[in-house]
Length: 146
Image: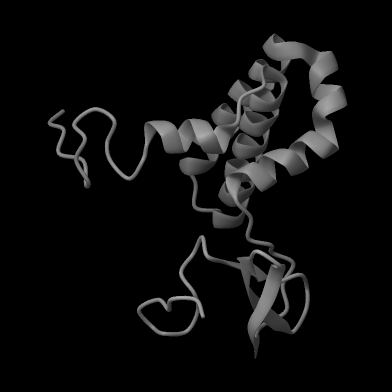
């Protein structure tokens, strides 16, 4: 059985996958040698959100946009990313949370697209550099003085 989190409700993040694909039930699954095994099902508010790992999101972006991104090239895709970061900056000045969330999503999507055409695994790169500690001071939390 999976270890439980503090509220003894779900296995800890990273051990389970929670699928919320518009169903009225969230299925808490754990991955083992034989695949995915249902742990519990509980009634939830219907939604279309799916929690994924970074590499799963990057693979989804690759399936959706790799051909187009490759044709646009590194410089063109980088320029799109920069434009999206600028749009995010504008939304941060306002108070429309939904619009800001969409700009965060655009930034992540274009970052994943750029990483895909560069052959960079974002999950591996980020976890290698930020492995539960600050890469500069090695503290957790960071103890750097700026």
